[in-house]
Image (cartoon, rainbow, N blue to C red; front, side, top):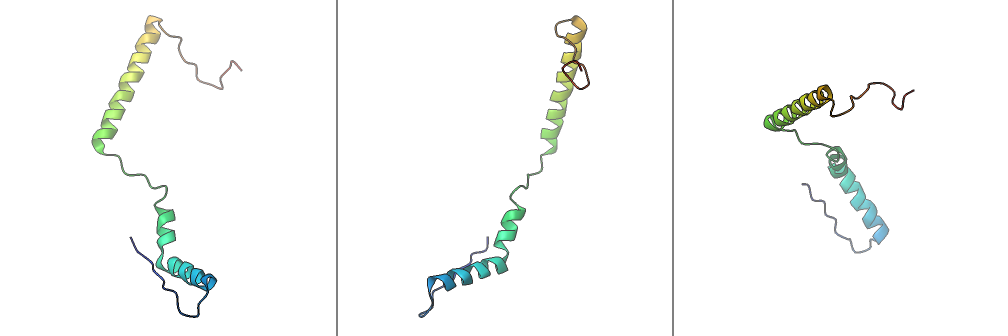
Length: 83
């Protein structure tokens, strides 16, 4: 992480100090980097992907089996609500 620091000069008012600080921050790229990593998701490991895929396959197989046994009503594909 890049730290940006600004010290107040003798005859400098707070407005110009804040302006100088914000220019330093913009120049250092801290804001750009923070916006870039804001929604970045970490890569999921292969084992987690495989286990979730196996879980998903088992779930679909169970649902198909229950449909065949008549335990649940089969899902219909389409727009829904009988249109």
